[in-house]
Every structure is written in structure tokens, then in C-alpha cells.
Length: 118
Length: 116
Image (cartoon, rainbow over all chains, first blue to last red; front, side, top):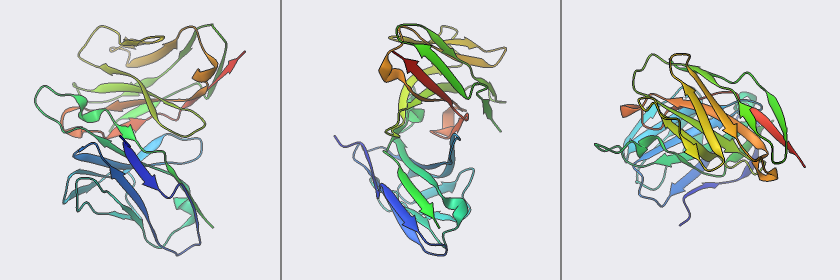
């Protein structure tokens, strides 16, 4: 069972370039998330999704876009990369919230993607 | 809005000894969850322990336990019999529960060094 898989693991971008961070999970989780971790800081939520076709903004969405066409995949798009987007990006997923199940907030994280914008 | 504060940027402990990492939080929610995550040099985020706010009993997972003081909004992590593999960055986090799903608010982290 692979869990949450992110690609690429490392990437260097030039200012103004665009790229997509890929994330896929094989646990049939409805909920998926993108967090970023700046040096020496905790994680901050960028975007999240509660199911295919449904996405919403988190705490720091500016400069990013997401889509969720399938349950498994949740790519994060960076348009016009800026140095402020230099960070480590984590994708995560969690089980569906149901009555009596509080596990919806138990996240399984990917290994992270280190992005540098120069 | 929720906030999480970890006042100890770095801590160190001797192997086999006990160490406590501090965390305070603020939330206006009555139903919420608290977490400790471990991030070793590999960068992987690993759940250490989870506490449901409505439960008075402190959560424990093997050598890891918490001291949850709801009125004081304090949630410290105790690591007993420290091992070299415990060396990592530790993050405290809070989630409002219910329809907040996995929208966690994290603290800034505490780097734990374990000396042999």
C-alpha cells in the first residue's frame, strides 16, 4: 500500500515559471490537502478538497490553484513562481467523516516536495 | 481562528531519560482535537499521538504520553525512555473537529536532540 505519493521530490524554478506538483493516494480517502512548510516554521494549509470536483481555499491560497477530477489525484499548480513560494510542500489525505468516526482529521502525509524559486 | 504556540525552539535529552515538550493553544471551538506530529530528517510527517478535547483522560501511545490541561489550554508531550530514533522536529497541532476535517493549525515546532 503506497499511501500518499508526491512528485517531484525536488525542483528548482526560475521566477515567473509555472509547474504542477502531483499528488496521488491509494487509500480511497475523500479528503485531500496541500500544506506548505517554510524554513523553521510549522505547516500552513494552502487548499483542500472534500471529494472529486470540490475544492476550497485554506490559509495561504494566493499564487496557487488546484483541481480534483478523481478521488485519487489532487495536483497543485503554481502559476508565475515567486521567491516567496520557496518552501516544502506536503500533500495529505484523510478518511471520510462519518457519524461516530472522528478519523477524518487523522492525516496521512506524503514525503514532501522541496521547491526553490530563484 | 486558532493559534498554537511552542515556546521551546530546541530541547535536548540523554538517551533513556524523559523529556517534556510544551504546547499551548487557543481556539474558540468547544469540540476539537490536539495532535503531536514528529518530523525526522527524512521530512516525513508522522502522527505521534492524538487527544480528543472532550476526553479528560490523557492519551498515551507506548513511550509517548500527553498532559492535557483543557482550562489552561496546554497540551504537553512527554517522551519516556528516550531513544536515538526520537530525535526529530516535533509539531503540536489543533483541529476544530467536525466539518473542519483535516484542517490543522500547527505550531512552529521544537527540535529534539537525543544524546547517547
